[in-house]
Length: 189
Ligand SMILES: [Fe+2]
Image (cartoon, rainbow, N blue to C red; front, side):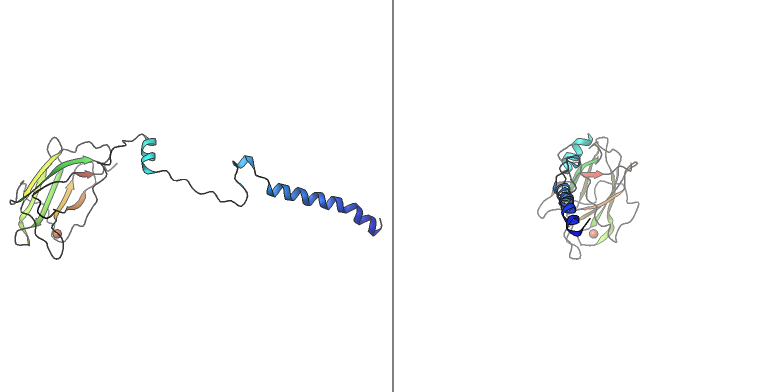
């Protein structure tokens, strides 16, 4: 075959191959659900509420979100006396609940410590209370003064069988003499 004939013979073949390549690379692939070549697919993240509902868990109003932990501080001492009052002027009460299903937690050990009226920590302002059969607790004290540049606060440590120990703090609002502070603890399994 002379050179001219070779070119005339191979040109249609080259053209056909190029056309096929262009069609294959540009055509959407139905088998990939419309996923086109060179197009990244972003992960889908469902809102938390949707996840809770789909898993069958309690889609409550959020009342049973675990109580946020807070620092223990340097003045914790174990084995505080069992007593519901270490002073007067401020009443703290609430219910201990499980984060799993909002059920009450009876018999939880709740340790409290705060500064006395003089703004210092001492053994007279430590106490242990227990949640009753309805999960309720009540504790009375002085209104804790600001301490070392920190706002008024009451330290709380909650322990109960089957639950992770929670260390947190309550921050009384200025001018308030009573507050509700529910304590929501997380099951160990
Ligand atoms: Fe403190």
